[in-house]
Length: 371
Image (cartoon, rainbow, N blue to C red; front, side, top):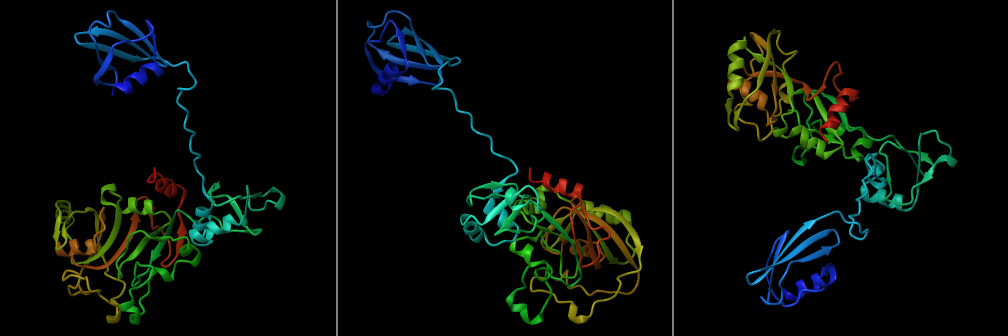
């Protein structure tokens, strides 16, 4: 420790008088005060100590020296903190941009960029002489740049989110389990274009096999997590056609207080109850394919006769068949269910089985979730 202090004094300080003699041991030190033990007779007055960017005073104490230090602006360029260059915003590595456009996997696009096969321009119609050659996979470009592979224009960037109106009896997975292959159930992997699948776009959560309505496809895993995590409180709005004539005030209170299910207690916000003509049609027996995880609540006998009500409600969690379970446990089994909103994205008049891009306001909201 003595060597450390001696080195510090000899290399960092310019003392008046010229030196501190009799230094023997180091007792304690903090960011602003240090106690240096010295022979009592070696130091008889206060010393001014000057450092680069620091002023200090050394004063004799009983059995030691008290060194007090305080910072002051430095005039030396050597000790000035180097400014960290700001990261360029809105640009990404070219291999990631290519992968997001469905050109290939990340490793494949790395090799393509490494071979210098990519050129970039400010607009798709730019002539060859206005295009810039990309020098390697680490080069960063705007995600929406006009890119050319071997001189051929590449597709535009994949959207952050896609909106899809899921039909009834379509699984919310990109590929069905092998043990159900013989049933030939429809799934989302059959409706999403190959280009978007190569970009690894994926469904945000799921809708039940027999539920229709809005489901989102996402390009960013981080956005997907924020759309689904309960702590984010992203609303999902449903319209459920239920058995019986629902009492709006009673049902509203029950949902607000929370409804017990086999998976826990869940609450919902009731918006409106209106009379209903019931479901458009009862499903054929072979369409009602329950999976192995379906509970007794799910398998309740559906009665498609008698009175029905349309219940519009909001939930912020997405547990398995939760809307159906809580309404069934309130005495109103669901015979038809449709999701009409996820956050600020609405189904609107989008036809069943069709896709659409986000509207400007919806895109702005989605991007705000990533900030």
